[in-house]
Length: 556
Figure 1 (tube, rainbow, N blue to C red):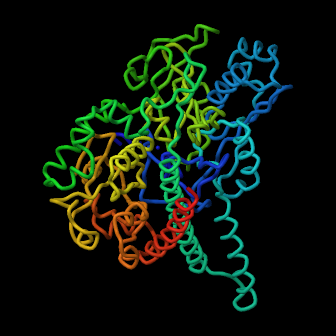
Figure 2: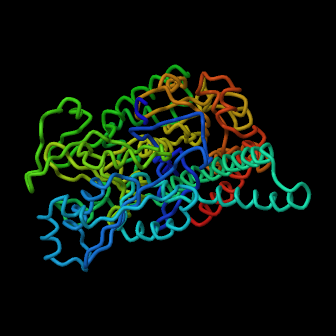
Figure 3: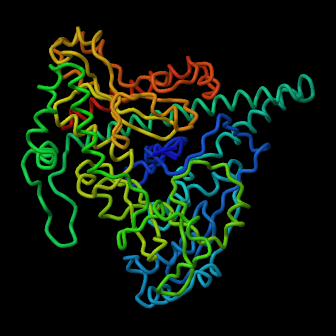
């Protein structure tokens, strides 16, 4: 994809996001979703979500490194990639159990030395996963696990277990009546369970995204007063002004430009003026917040600018131990159904910059980071951490993110500018953006009148795109679900009648057909579940999200 390719954050590798982003239910670590919604740099989408273990070999590699002072695990990556992280971990860990002698020895050890102490097992994705996932989750929480994809920490054995149990039950019943199941009965069970699992997958992921909106609202209500620690100042820095995020916008975008953006003034103007003003703002936003690929913190190099294909035949050596290094795998990929043999074939491959996902450090958790991406520079061999922050304040200071961070930041900025009718939109094909209700003189209408006027306008901060909803149809992704989430309590703040408020609440809306040129029958086939089931899941998640938001608002 152009910018995609995730955040299931989120919640997610359908995620994955989001971003983080095709996934099943989100896993939590330290109260935060592991899954991030938002753009990945490598995303494989397929209309065929084959979940039958008999027809597809789904094996995942689990690596274990043991020494006298540390036990580390790796999930899903080639052995050499895992060994690279082990070397980084032992050299940089602040764990008191690691002696200076251990760190010194590990720093001088070659990757081959480390690999000699690594054991690797192949685990069947469906049949054996439940026997390992709890241990892996604990290692993640302890900061001792490297993941190729964080959604690997989700439960995946349930389908196979349930399906086999159902077959055994029907087999028993069949013995009493007919003696055995015929082929059509087995196929019927497979189809029924595949549809059930697709529905559960959709409902859980929808709930994860709804939780993400709740987190954004919580960030707005708490709006932290302090910035992260800086290298040149041991004390916390406070906001330059007392006006929080709005004050930051005024400082950076200019007071006059900010006044032109304020909802109180802009919404009473024509739609043309509104669109032009937002275009200017998003052009500035994209220049201020570049899309992060894998830029090195030390030398500034990125494999995006110097792909491996341009360097074939050139050996780039690690100045510490002389080992050949390389990278071009900037990814947050979501294709989990891989054959482990391809990872064995890549065992000696050094052409990677993306090392993997690790749990966030204590400092990174201050910005509600749910996971951290680790990169190794191909030019200077330095390591760069990319925490996936979920606080607008942290993102404004690091100015590092992808669509997950930047859509959240844009949403928060619009709220600070006085917009209450805004939505956070998630594309299951791994992208996320914002919508705002605009139209001629929409700001002059009462809430009742607005229910039939104005329109939701697409705002993509990564692409600086305004009112271009069909932009993503050219990205070559198979779109299945595009859902819009918004905070009904923000919308209700502009109304006065309680009955009227209730009629306006639609926290989750399916907006797929607005953003795709694909026919509805094609979208339905991709989804693999009836439209009625989609509507039921949306209703269930909407009710839960409204209840959660009510409690969040009441507690502040």
